Image (cartoon, rainbow, N blue to C red; front, side, top):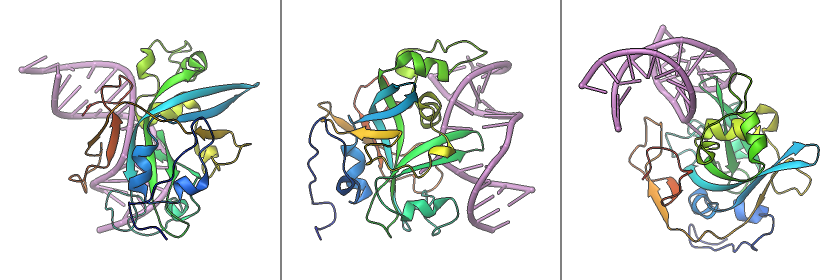
Length: 214
DNA sequence: AGGCCGATATTCT
DNA sequence: GAATATCGGCCTT
């Protein structure tokens, strides 16, 4: 086994991200997901593609801000399961949040996808974010800004919980891509415990990153 | 530019 | 009963 935090799994550019990539320490996976393309089938042969610009790492039994902190529950058990799967949960009973499971099976960890920039399918996203029966008029950069908005714009909900993003036939997939911008770290958003650790990773200066921008 | 609030599922006290 | 990995609207500086 490689030592914690030192191993490298190089992603073939433009190719699907494989399970080995996710079966590593969450804290190593999180920043390397920046720049990757998140792909969601939209029905009728259409798809939405979005470039990930902001993520947060949520660790396991030693991270008080993680759903896995108190061990597996009905909701959080998936965080202890196989890597490369989607963990979608309902936040405040209203908004969905999407995560990618990391670490080998048996060890908990997940990366929360906080924000992305729409590359393909902007009109589909605008309709998903409709307000008052009309397509959303928010600026393009804000369509998938924030974890709740991201799930709404991509059409992700509890029915997508557990999807294998490493499967070529899955409704939700990922394509690896190198990102050239600088990665900036910051403290995680909206938590009350473990506030001191810098486990939020953003592409510096990207307009699709949520506020407050580091 | 920032504070308070309501909506409300899951989990914890 | 209270807290929470949120968001948009409405209010006050």
